[in-house]
Image 1 (spheres, one colour):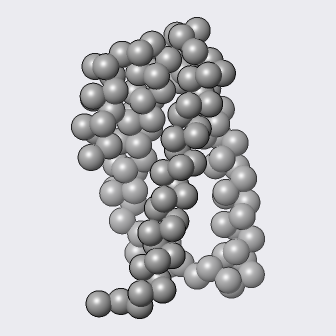
Image 2 (cartoon, one colour):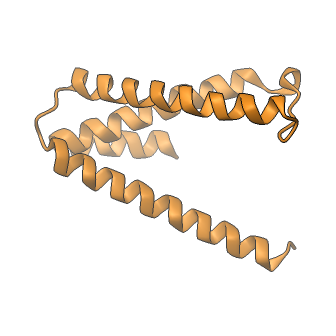
Length: 115
């Protein structure tokens, strides 16, 4: 049922992702506190998403052009990719909004969307 080494790597990467997310959430709260309005939270996430998309698109383009990463874009289920992107954006906005205003309702909604 799989190589134990790969399972260990998967567990380590999952723990690292959880640690990174928790650190980011706490740093966001410490840095911005309760000062951000919903539109400012959205603007922050838009800037962060645009910067990430530009950087990662460049990395992906280099990997695809050198043949390191091969993908057939015609076989990608784009409707599912877009639906996941919309749900993820809503999830992140509600989490950040909930953190910035200490709203249990926003946090609960975000958690349900994240599931």
